[in-house]
Length: 149
Image 1 (cartoon, rainbow, N blue to C red):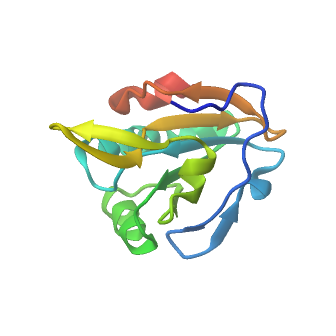
Image 2 (image 1 turned 180 degrees about the horizontal axis):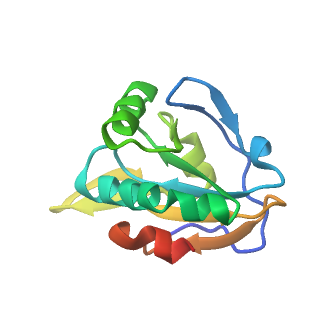
């Protein structure tokens, strides 16, 4: 779905996290970043994905990765989701879909014959130089950490 390719510069982004603090790609310069896009807080697939990343968080830290989740949910919903599942990483509120559009993951979807716009679950691994190191489009929500690591 996305048109971003491995080796290309990751699009700059700016968005608020669950604490309403502005976050940008620039702050991760010199670090590896797992930027994962998911449709909605507290749904079965999204919860499985977040909890798998949480349960393997120590492996990501040991390997030098930061993790940042992105969905259209607002800051308050993210705060509740993080508290409910004790997530150790931040979530960005992409309420205007600007980040999803920049990464090419805002697209037409279909469920039960109804078409609508939404996030296509996708993960980008961004290297220390701000380039796309990996794109995972077929996310296994229950084993996502293993797909990345």
